[in-house]
Image (cartoon, rainbow, N blue to C red; front, side, top):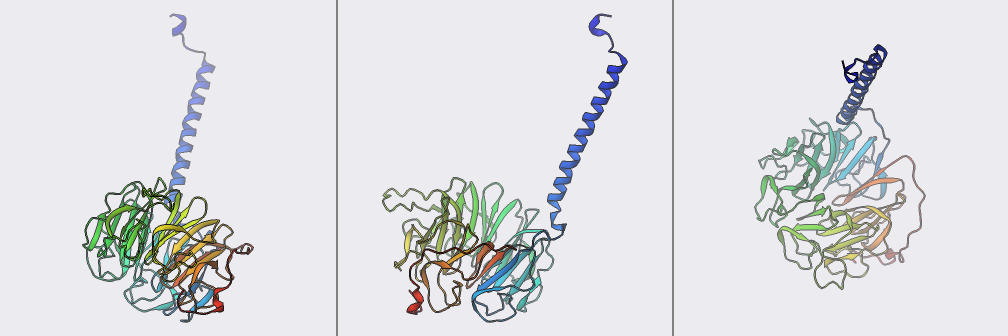
Length: 436
C-alpha cells in the first residue's frame, strides 16, 4: 500500500465516528427546533392570553356598539365591558368587532343583517362570539358586513350581502361566516361601505361587492359577488376600502386610488372617477407635472376623503371637507390634491371614519378632527365639528385606533403614558354651530 492508502489509526477512526454522530445530532436538534418554532407559529392561537389589552370607545351608540351596557352616545371614551386580551379591534357602521389573543372574534352592536356573526339578527350591547370561526389573525368591519382573515390565508365574511360584498358567489345575507370564493394566500383585508378588498402575498389586490363607481378597480362598473383582480396594480403592501373608493400603498411609497371621485377623494387633481387604479398626485402645490405623492407609509380611506401618513410623521388629506375632515383650518372646500393636516406631527397611525379622522401619536395619545354630531371627536361635546386636530380627552396608553361610521375604538394597554400639551388654536366651541 502506498502511504496515502493506509488506514488511519483506530483512535482517529473512533473520533471521526464521534464527530459525525455529533454533527448528525446537531442537525437533528436544529431541525427539531425549527419545526417546533414553525408549529408554535402555526398553532399560536392555542397559547394562553399574552396581553391584557382592553378597549375604549366613544361616539354613536344607538345599537350598543360602544359596549358600555347602554345605548347612549358618548363624547368621551368609555371602557368596552367584558373584552380583554385583545389583539385588534374594528369599528363598522353600527357594530364593533374584536380579535382576542386566542384568535377568536367577538362582536357587538347592530345585527340587522347578521353582521355580528352569531347566527341571529338580534342586536347586542354585550360582546357575542362570532360562530364557527377560529384561527383569525385580522379583522375588518364595513358598514353592515364583516371580514376575517384566518392564519391559513383564507378570508371569511358575514352580514349584509346586497351587492355581493361577502364574496361567496351569492347575494344572500349571512349571520355566520362564509368563505370568500377560492381566495387564498391573503395577508391583509379591508371592508368598505359595500365592497371588500384583499391583498395577497404576491402584492396583487382583489375586490368584490358594489362597483357603481368603479371601486372594484377591474375596469367596469359591474358589481361582483366573487373576487376580481384589481388591474393594473402590483407591488402593493397595504390597502384600504372607503365609501365608494379604494386606496393602495405601493412598496415604493406611492399611492394608487380608484372608484368614486365626486369630491376629489382619489387625489388625482380632478374629480373624474376611475374604474382602474390612478396615481395620487404630489402634495407640492408648485408641481405642474402631476408627480406622484411619495414617502407614504400608511393610508386610510374615509367616507369621501382620504388620508396618508408620511415617513416624517406628518399627515396629508384630500377629498370632501364639509365637516372639516381635511384638517386644514378654514378651507371648507373639497380638495382634489393632498394637503397637509395642520397642527399635527409625530404620528404613527391614522384612520378615517365617515366624516372624521383619528391619529395616534408616538406618545400614545390620540388626535381627532372632522364631524362630531355623535361625539366622534371625543372632545366632551357633540355640537360642533372641528377643522383641526385636537386631543381625545382622557385617553392615554393607546396601542391602536379604529374609526367607524360614527363611533371609534382605541386599544389600550396596562401602562398609560403622560399627557402632553397640544399646539392647537383657541377652542371653537365658544360659538356652537352644526357645521364649520
